[in-house]
Image 1 (cartoon, helix red, strand yellow):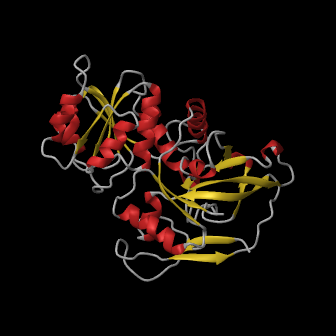
Image 2 (cartoon, rainbow, N blue to C red; image 1 turned 45 degrees about the vertical axis):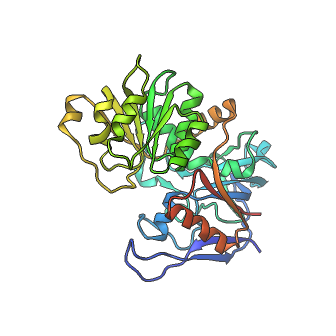
Image 3 (cartoon, helix red, strand yellow; image 1 turned 90 degrees about the vertical axis):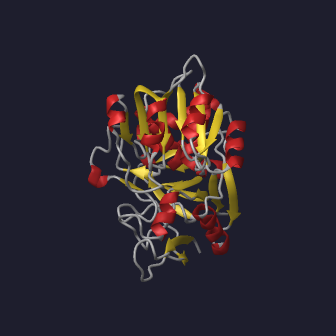
Length: 354
């Protein structure tokens, strides 16, 4: 019997409650007109899933399966499907739906949602089978395994939009600073930037993570727990270009106060998350330096296609921190969430479903 993994509702206040995982037996779906039936092989976790378990995310569904990132094989095509060559091919689920191509944002925000435990769409990667329309999947780059494919979508699309679309500095020789290295988005930005010829610099509170980032191609790193880390960052920059062109940030907090003086006039901060706190301080110093602060989320279907094309061309493999086997391995999956809770991971946390 096919299975799905959901969160089970229990009483508790947002931020205090922690919804338990629930394994369910479900009927095997049959594809309707224009639909594909996909047998999922792997799925990966994101911070969004941890927030869902704490009821710190809007529009939670307790019946739709968890997880936004999934990789599987198309095993059946419904009537009217045009891309029957997808049969028996490895595909990736688009991690968000309702956003086609507009670079500014979703064409109709009311229809936009990230998949996985979402009231908006029934899709979720934590299940054995999923139905998706042809426009809701993309071929997995051929050099990737199912686990590696499942580690790509959400963080890769978020990182691509932040670096390429929003920062405007995805160019060889530009100096890019990425905060919170070790997280999935930050690592994808690092890998993309290195492949583009950017000079990549990173931060972490863990020296071991800084060393690993340098092994992946970062020019240098700073420990944000160290007093005056922004001066250390300044000293790392090349003398011929002694400033940052852009900051890709997922932490928020005091990044503007700390790093604004290191950014060139007109430099960009592309912020995709605020793990330190829900607000950021905006300083007059940043105004005088014409710094641009740009909020950025996931991305469009067009950006997802562009990202996957780049990954395939440059044979980029996502960094995987740890995998567990079995959708029914609740204890193991809970362990992945614990890694995320305590910031132990360096890379993605993946469930091998089969």
